Length: 147
Length: 147
Image 1 (cartoon, rainbow over the protein chains, first blue to last red):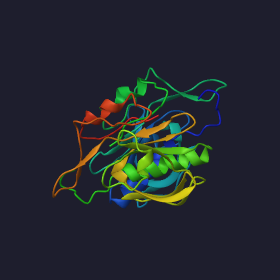
Image 2: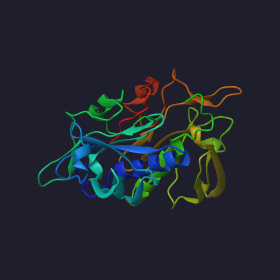
Image 3: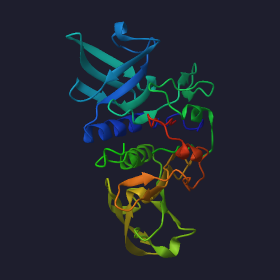
Image 4: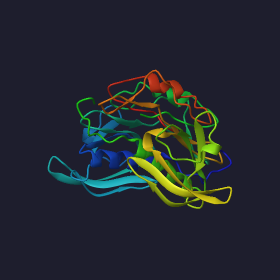
C-alpha cells in the first residue's frame, strides 16, 4: 500500500454507510471524535480529548461527510456553531439507541508522508469495542469481519 | 436486538460502501459468495461451495446491490448469465488488486425467526481474514474496528 499514496481511506465510505444505515432504521447516528488542534468543535463539551456528537439530519444543518472532513452546523446551548472534523479524527460511529456501529483505529500523520495507521494505539471508541486489538493486526488482505 | 426484527442489516450498506471505494480508487471489486440453494450463480465455477465474482461496473450490467439481494448480469465463457445472491450469502468484498476489503460472519436463518449470526461459524472469506474470530465475539455495542 505504501506505493499508492493517492489511495483513499475506506473510513469516509464506511462512515457514510453507517450514517445511512442509522437514518434508514430510525436511529440517531453519533460520532466519537478525537479532539486535537485540527478539530473545530465546541471545546466546552470536550472530555478527555473526546467529544460525542449527534450527526443526524435533524440535529445538524449542512452536513457533509466528505473524504477529508465531516462538516456541519449544530446547536449547543441554543447557539449555532460550525464544526469541522478531519475524517481521521472520527474514532467511531454508532447508533445512540443500541450502540451498534463501527470504530476505527487511531491514525498518526507522519511528517512528509501519507497518514499511517498507528499500530501501537488502540481506538478509544465510546462505547468501548471488544475488537479494539484488531487494530494492531496487519494482514496482507486487510479484511475485517463485521456484523 | 432480538426485540427489533425489522432492523436492516448493516451488510448491504457496507458492501455498497466498499464497492464505491473500489470504483473510486480504480480497483476491481470482487465478492466471495457462499453458494447454496438460494443463490443463482454459474454452478460450473463454484468450488467448495464458494464462488468469487467480479462485480465491477465494467464486468456487469444492471448491477443492483439492494438490502436483500445482489443482482446483475455477467458474461461467463462468452455467455451472459443472470446472477442473484441473497445479501447474507456475500461473505466478503475486496479489491482484486490488493485484497483490501471486508468480510462478514456467516448468517444462519432460524425457522420462523429473523436471521441470526451463527456464533459457532467463522467467515470463510477468500483471501482468508486474520480477523475471522471476531465473528464469535459478542458485545453490547457491536462496534467493529476497521482500517
